[in-house]
Image (cartoon, rainbow, N blue to C red; front, side, top):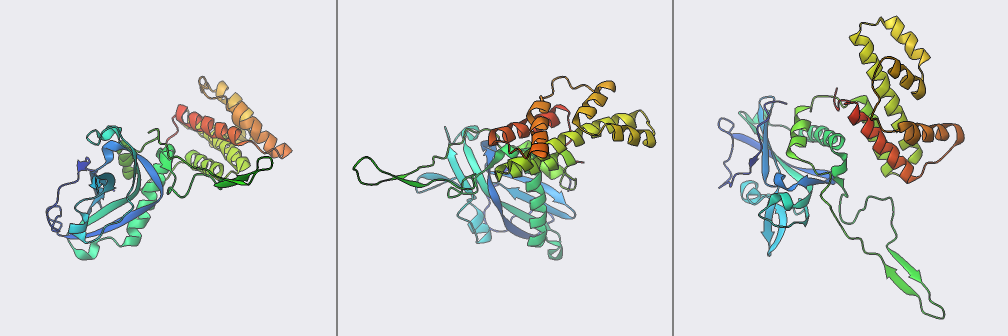
Length: 332
């Protein structure tokens, strides 16, 4: 995938004959996202165009439209152009002014993809589009995991919740209580245009091993498996340090036999840190992962310890901070 074109506002189309010049055949796809994603309001109504093989593709993000006087997400020209639409593009949580997109906090649930070709036989099958979309979405999850929101208002980011309870007062009748969950979005961790560009440009690249492990840690954390989350964080850190040392060796043309000997002697976080210091690989400013990640990991391995949710969350946060501080690439 290449030749990314700067995002544009979706054109106000008249009729169903729209296509880039020289590409008369088209096919379109609704891509439903498993989770919703908080997006920068300035993305609303944008069309991101790019080339894929001999095709031209357009990634359309819904804009704000009004139905019965209420603002919703939608693509106004879609039904007239393609004869189809969906009722769940996502939702607008809050805004200061609809005329100021930067103030709109929206969660995206569906995007619309168009494929244009010079010949109808080369237009992409839905299964190919789905495969490409999965790679892009996974990249976005790695790039901006904090943008992920709940998949629907009926599903929360927990395995369970208390919706009703019953209490008794002395000599009183049972009082049924219901909990009300308010959806509050503070606008942090939103997908931006640069995030989408970055994901598209790296669609054929592999996510680096440290960030794969970090993503696994986040997944375990969301499923309340604190042990696995901390173990993945610790492994991520050790792999990162080994890679930094290996890069140093390669830059200094260290023989492979000597590298293998050194790594056999430096097996574990403490030894890797000590080796890094001897090689003048700076650790100044790094999070104290010995305290927040390695020590809990050791307790898990040697004592069957179960970290708390707070401990596992801090371990994830500090591991991610370490990767960012050491400038570990997202893709290989």
